[in-house]
Length: 365
Image (tube, rainbow, N blue to C red; front, side):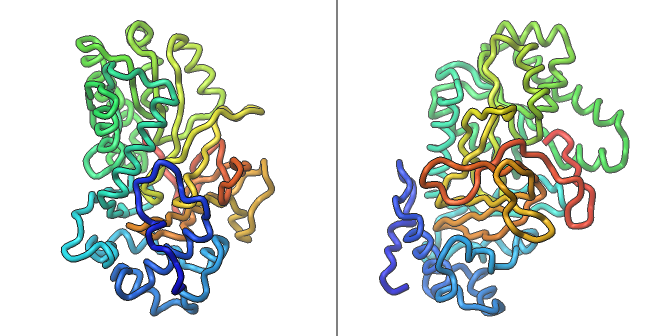
């Protein structure tokens, strides 16, 4: 580890480092050296049955780490910031998960990583068909969630006026668990009604929302007509939509490009989207070496064959945070990634029926 180049960890970068293996070695040296590692990982290292500085050689070796994401529900945010950022360190943005599997998990995202994600998402929006300089309505979680924060900053980069309607995914999940279907419909009507006010009064050509909310809009003929007159780009994320649903939505909104992204609080970013085939509308490629996906058999931990469904395991490896071997509550079909990618790509992502002994409730996000 003495010869590692810690500058490989610096972001933002226009192009990822060319040697993922060297990047991994630098990340391990950074996170597990006394002078640069975070209090959280330096404490955890003392409990591991191996020394990360000498025992982690390849990305596959990340499987040796325990899944620590449940610790992120309660660990002090300051303990997650690597000492190498100095004292005092830069102030982090704190984002929380949706609470699908219990108390929310928190991540600390430092300014260098924030800038990298904004650049990626700006590129993704443009590649997907976003109309620069045209109004942008974001009907997504804000508050403790990252999606609304990043979308606002991306809109600024693209010269678009940003309109925002908040949704509270935790409240919807709570109502779903209680089995009060009428309350969910009432909440959907409440959110869609706010979107209608903006769509009627403002010049909006771009929309970001979740599949359940776009489906709710699609059930209202008056709103469908309004959207078809105004919208030209719709970005879906935050919930599952199958190929048949996407086909139907494209029939209902024929003048609008409809695309999707897949992201997670625990990877501190979103994957890159490309068009799929063989009945899979989209394939999601992780931004390696910062994010690595595996699709595995939940019983054995072995990777499933390409084209087969398995449980998604996520790894986040950056200067600001290290979250290895995170068994997520999602399943996906394993796909080959582009040349040079580390790990798997994903398609047909959907939630597991149960996770850690509890039913998975998706709600609207």
